Length: 426
Ligand SMILES: *[C@@H]1O[C@H](CO)[C@@H](O)[C@H](O)[C@H]1NC(C)=O
Ligand SMILES: *[C@@H]1O[C@H](CO)[C@@H](O)[C@H](O)[C@H]1NC(C)=O
Ligand SMILES: *[C@@H]1O[C@H](CO)[C@@H](O)[C@H](O)[C@H]1NC(C)=O
Image (cartoon, rainbow, N blue to C red; front, side, top):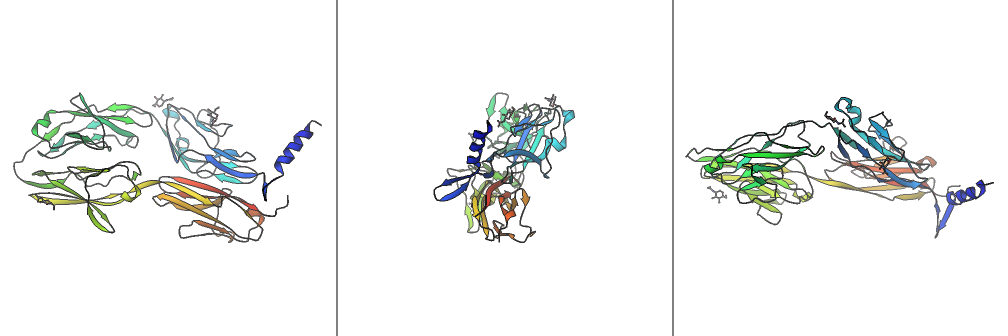
């Protein structure tokens, strides 16, 4: 008897709601509303909790999958699956590090009676806290030229460790800045430049300081470096220290290009930008700062990608180097329609629009399974980049959740749409 009022409430909420002209079913497929970023790093000291949440009606259930689609299972003292949908990586000792857990690809899924959706692939990386040392070495420089000091970071921690500052003569701190001070410039990439070196600069000693971005450990170089100033007393044509293009840069970050060379007399530098419209000389401006073989371009934009050329010359000769800048801009994705009601036998079409760099590949799923590889022949992916999904002569099994995914080397994003059948008998 007591269940009567309850049943009435349930019936009225699961049947139909009539809103305006349309008839709207009070059920809704799952849509992910928050998921972790494409990359999650944590220290073995802290562990990490990662979370996915979804909306829909009935309220979707959240599960975690490995990158290959198999379910994620709890492992005592290592990995816990919490009832609220979070996954918890416990702090661990180096001896319990497990590659298949601590350096693996995960994704979440949300499902309810309407269908199933998948989250992006999340690369999880646990970092075991380890002691590391950094070193500095003497740098050779011709008088009047630019001296370059580098902080050498061991390869096993290189991807996590950044140079935070330099200390001259144990007293004077030099931090990264967009522009140089009078004599020094610490680049955002970690090198310390000393301009217009004279023999008196050989008196100073330099150390570097670093921080590990996951563990927070800070380490100062145990050794000191000096500038070794040698004067050959004869003209020397410019010779570049190195010819390396910078690593890909994210929009908003600072681009640093270096073509520092050594020569006597000290070389003069000119920078050019090459594009389809031709070659243009680069001058200092609000965003651009150049001095003695370095070009610093702040707040990088997608259109800053391309080829840059640096000329160095003096009376003894000249040299030229070409550097390539590539820009990463975050992906954004949009799928229309987000919800469509189609009568049996009619066609449905979804359009996925993606922006961002590098250009991602696009693929589609229905209820978490890949679509469009010709299986039924009725689902066709078209558009030169695969951005349109067309389902012809819709049948009952076509109802459910459709997703468009976009993936490049840096990121993965997804968008969700629901296909409902029209005139469906309740
Ligand atoms: C899930 O539960 C855990 C443990 O109770 C909690 O620490 C975590 O914050 C919860 N996650 C969310 C998103 O509420
Ligand atoms: C993390 O690893 C370090 C290095 O092996 C170890 O000293 C430390 O105890 C570990 N942390 C935990 C919480 O086990
Ligand atoms: C270096 O090149 C610039 C531009 O081409 C020129 O103006 C300058 O005279 C050159 N300097 C020397 C020392 O040749």
